[in-house]
Length: 256
Image (cartoon, rainbow, N blue to C red; front, side):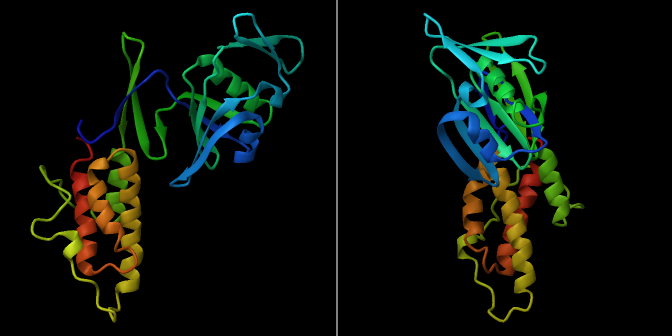
């Protein structure tokens, strides 16, 4: 499948939903904070969970491992987690009240779950199979690695229908470009074009959707996206047609 991302991982990201929490809540118990960045409104966080920030007692063992004691809600049964001597990062992608997370160590993931549950009401829903328009298909290999196939065919189809391509027939062997019509050589719009404002709004929506696909599973349209995005403030009719052509290409190849 040439246009879908294929990764080999040591873990599967977990899908979760927060009932009431913010980025600040997660910051409270992640020590050695590494990174917070925004990608299409997704907050990406990388750090190490600090047991003491959630009130969990911890002891460093002779071999360097760390034993964390987590009291139960009724304080009758304690849970213990043994962390590796070299602490592993937890990686989080947070969008509004949904997020995915993973670590290369199962105990680190469990500590994160326990720490978050001690502060907010949260549902942990197991391995992620769908998140923000992306579908995930997992396969575990004999080597212990896990491969994941990422697909955005449903998002691509929805976007195509949204911008009027519902009756478009898929064309095999399309490319993102129209022959003889390079995007960067198309003429600008007429300054007095009465349709410019309406066209610009739709054009920006198309380019934004293509951008999301290019970032996640369709890097093959990144060069065309770069050209299209540079005309987002005032696209001509030809630029608009070029954007639709890229969308037609994505639609025609969404199941490849």
